[in-house]
Structures are given as C-alpha cells and as structure tokens.
Length: 292
Ligand SMILES: NC(=O)c1ccc[n+]([C@@H]2O[C@H](COP(=O)([O-])OP(=O)(O)OC[C@H]3O[C@@H](n4cnc5c(N)ncnc54)[C@H](OP(=O)(O)O)[C@@H]3O)[C@@H](O)[C@H]2O)c1
Image 1 (cartoon, protein in one colour):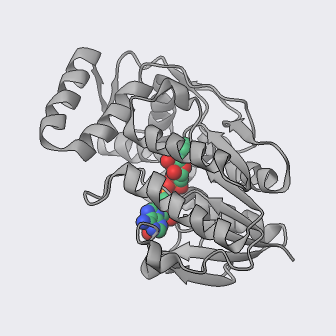
Image 2: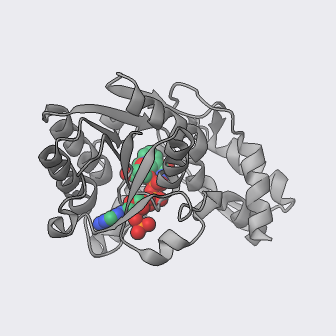
C-alpha cells in the first residue's frame, strides 16, 4: 500500500485530496496544525477528514523543528499548504515558500520519491502579487531539487465564490471593472482527482480548470437567480479600486496584497484546460441551503 503525506489537509482542496487518496487505496498521513479544524467538517461543503486519515502529524510548517520525521516511510508528498488569506503574522514567503521548503527538506532527508505541489494557473501573468511570487519561488526550488515532482496549476476554486449566494441574500454585491473577464473555476473534488492522477503519472506540470466558463457578471447573475433575491449591485471602476488598494497599502501590507490579487484577476481572462463534472449551479444551490 502506498503512503502519502498530505500537507494542507484541513484546507478546502486538502480535504478532497485526502478523500481521493483514500478512495484510491492510499495510507494517509495528514499534516495538521489545528486539532479543532481537523475535527470539524470542511469549509464550503468540503468533507470531514478525521475518519479518513490514518495518522495525524501535528506541526506548524513555519517551524521546521516541529516537522522532524514527517517524511519517514512516505512514497509521495502532496502539498496544498498555503496562505490564501492574511493571518497578520506571517507573509506569503513565510508560508507558501518557506513552509513548503521546510517540508521539502524533510522529504529529501527521508528519501521520498515524489512531491506534488499546488501553485496557480497562469502565474507568469500575475507576478506582481506576493502570493504568486512565493508559490513560484518554491516551484523553482522544487523543480531543481533531487526529487521527482509535479506542479498543479489550477484556476480558482469553488470555495472562492461560495460567498456569492450569501452576499446576494444579504442584499449587496460588488465587482471591479466591467465584470466581463472570463474564468472556469473548479470544484475541490474534481481538482483532487487531477492532483492524485499527477501523483501517479509522469507529467511535470498540469494546468486545469472547471468544465464551465463564466464571466464574473454571469456568476453574480447565477447567484442572484439561485438566492431568489435582487441585491444592490455596485461595480467599482478600476481607478477607484486601484486607489483603494494603494491607500490600504499605506496601512496594511497583508490586506493590500489580497486586494491587489482581486484587482489583478479583474483585468484578465483566466481560462484553463477544462476538467471535471461539478457544475457551479449545483454548488450554489448547496451554498444557499448552507446559508438559510
Ligand atoms: N483558493 C483558490 O481559488 C486557489 C486557486 C489556485 C491556487 N490555490 C492554491 O491552492 C492552495 C490550497 O488552497 P485552499 O483554498 O485549499 O487553501 P486553504 O483552504 O486555506 O488551505 C490551506 C491549508 O494550509 C494549511 N496551513 C497554512 N499555514 C500552515 C502552517 N504554517 N502549518 C501547517 N499548515 C498550514 C492550512 O491549515 P489550517 O486549516 O490550520 O489553516 C490549510 O490546511 C494554496 O496554496 C492556494 O494558494 C488556491
């Protein structure tokens, strides 16, 4: 039986990855830093994992001393460990880069044969964003290391747009620019299949998105239809959004970086190779049930 270490196991994608590895017969060690989160069901309908994991390894990836031995006996490391929202303590370089470097160091020490890492789609078009810079810095180190690797490059996840329905229900939604940029977000379960396929295959980089392409406005309209409530709509012009981002940057670097991500994505089409079966409409219906 093959053994996998899942780093980021309590996150949206990590939970589906644990589930998919188990479905395919793997023994799973999960890197967990928060016992409460491990026991709880996941965000945005992501599965519970406390009944799936074979061994829990409690550690904080930013503290290398807590990771000693985490790679022992492991055949493949899968990492979706990262910081998608500021914790106001660490930078993206502390977590997405250095945290994953600390895990890679343990994997190399233990002679783990393969490391699968989740970065972002079209990173080269978003290198102004610290989160993306940190991901890609790690990708360069991983690909130069003496270990087989696969880098997954996904589009946005369903979890990122899960709030659309509750915002529509609350009566207020906004976007930046004209809202006509296109993207194909992907469900965690579909993406997890791609990740485990990569763990078992030989591709070094895999670009992927969901099966349906939407403009931002179309996703807003779909959420409004499913919420059954007409919210107030506020399109923010770029000049105003850019000004707000710059202003926030004077006071708080972390919030600035998240806002910069949002304004950057609002300017470009992000359409990646289509994969999966999960439809956004069904997900929004489930989100409405969660919100009401
Ligand atoms: N969300 C998207 O739309 C999207 C799109 C493309 C790429 N990505 C990338 O995909 C990856 C996973 O995204 P996601 O949405 O699944 O994120 P998520 O739900 O926030 O999960 C992140 C995971 O990393 C863990 N983690 C963070 N810092 C840690 C530390 N110091 N020590 C141990 N564990 C730590 C978190 O643990 P806790 O549960 O304890 O916080 C959580 O399990 C990220 O790297 C993200 O940048 C995301």
